[in-house]
Length: 117
Image (cartoon, rainbow, N blue to C red; front, side, top):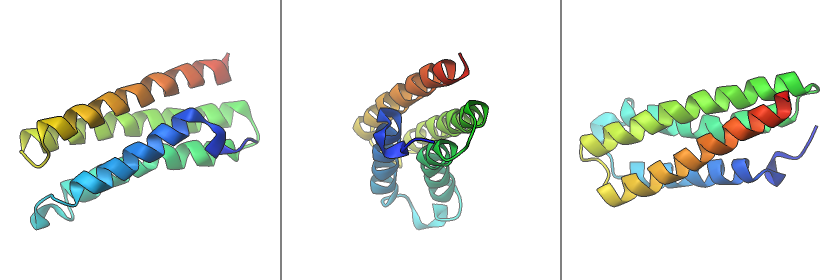
């Protein structure tokens, strides 16, 4: 077991989630139960699964939760693209979020390899 707050990838994922909540406040009200909810849930799932995996007893369990985080990262990446294409977020916000989610994905892939290796 380790403290998830000590992991740089968790810090970045938490910041990504905060940023997603900030930009999605401006989404149309009719998206509250659609894109807004889906984007927020996929974003929050990334650091939540890292945290849950840190509480597991085996490295394999931890790696599985990191893999779930990676899947949520891909889902969130698509939702921010959709939000940009629907003009719900600015191109500037999109580029910031895209850069951050790609950093998170790379860090997760590296950490999965390290944990499994």
